[in-house]
Image (cartoon, rainbow, N blue to C red):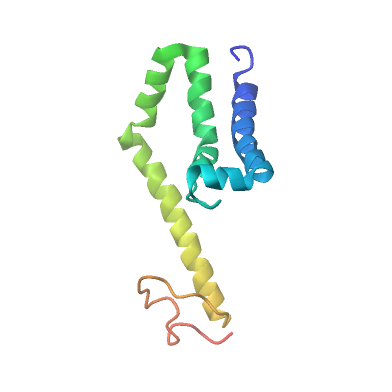
Length: 131
């Protein structure tokens, strides 16, 4: 793992994710009976599979750099002042992109599902020109 950390990261993440998917493919009834939950996005094993890249990264860092490397990674990972601008950029960009797509769909007269909140400036027929 120390010689090829990137390969190790991808291999571990792949094995966790597809290992869990394989278990659900081979033994769906047994896993549902074991956990008492249907196979959906809220299933504990699905959450584990979705966390596979993060868990894989922590494991590789721990093996390659040791405990001090993991602590240094967490210090950078949790430095909120530096991370804040990226969170705003990513989440603001996703929300903005969604709003632009919603506006374009409504301006074309397509059916758009209602939002759980009001955005009167999007979809207001007075503001949307004829296409």
